[in-house]
Image (tube, rainbow, N blue to C red; front, side):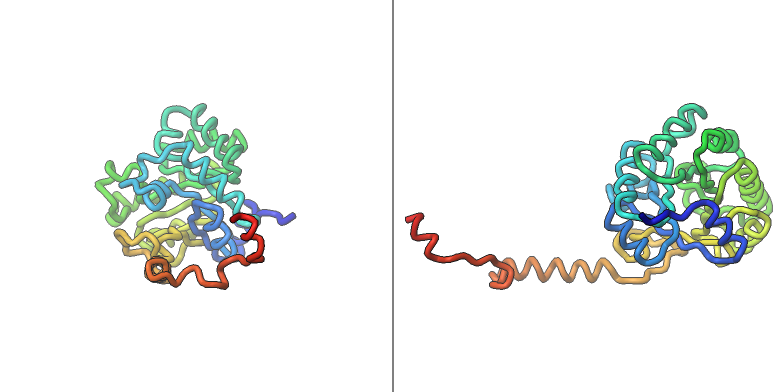
Length: 277
């Protein structure tokens, strides 16, 4: 049986300056593709609401949705370390509820850790989860679940006060016991300073090259989503055009009577049909 990567592997990678590749995945087939490409971490992100369910943002994602998708990704992967997003309002009420909901992601969703957004304001929740034996990945900078309070999807930490806030959030999350930290939409220089200061790995998304690892949404990497494309996204395959071409060919061949051809059909002895007359 294949052993999954664990926390010690990522501590070692940080120490040895080995970069961590992380991708989102929401289904078993996506997990197989991402893991097969060599990604060490798979994030079952609450972005599933937008890219798989057509929601306008992540706020409508429920815990039940996350458990469903986490379990699917778990069944589709063997080695990658799995991180499940805690959706909006699944950890804000109190620490007992946060522990209960995070526990369900591990127990029913079969992920190895959870990710939650927020810095200093989430320190006590992170500590409570870690005490309960639940590994936590932090997330500071742009936090999509609270983007309205941040003034929208904007780069965080560009001015002196903002940089101080992101820096202090990062230090607090690490001190609380998080095993890794996502830095989203922060200036590259600020991310470099934070990465050098922390003993835990940083995973960047729109945070420059100096982070210990990088994460992108699989649908963005393969151009499946087709909606707004953030500045930090790089498309590595024109997936939507390839898929659209294939689907269009299928529809046309059905309309023209070209599919299925003889090689796609099953044969039988014609004499069997005589008994039906």
